[in-house]
Length: 187
Image 1 (tube, rainbow, N blue to C red):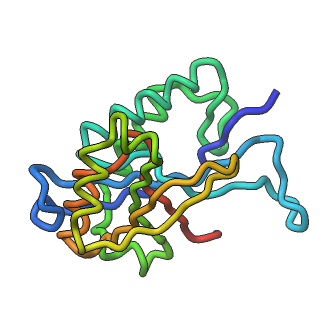
Image 2 (cartoon, helix red, strand yellow; image 1 turned 90 degrees about the vertical axis):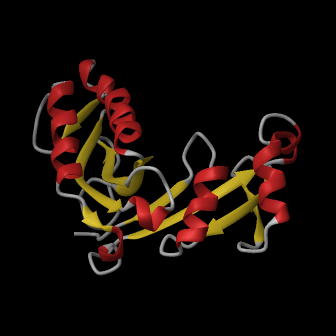
């Protein structure tokens, strides 16, 4: 039976003034991988960086708590442990959030964080009409096209994380699901 391993955690903070938001924004970036996937040449377990959560601290901790539930059945462990209690996983993220680096330091530390909003034609008609209208009427960010692995296409807007007006627009129009891509240092 396989399980996920959380290798490293890094948090970045953007002040409310930078984001044009009512609260500081936090980006929780995690290096994780499956216990039964190995890299071809290096003989180490395959892993990659992803954004676990982005938003106000309380939003991020809610997502961490949801993820921690996987620890109960042994589906998620912290690196170097056989079993991880959900409280230990949450504690690890609280520690990372408490030591969050300023967002401007991300590049220097070897991280790349990209914000985006994707809206399909069906979403534009159904529940995402406000976001679609807002994004198509602005000139700050140019739309592109995205095709997912299943062949479904959608409109995509990419935002510069260091431009406050773009971050504010992303906050207003982001999907409730994942809307941040992250990559970090290999070692």
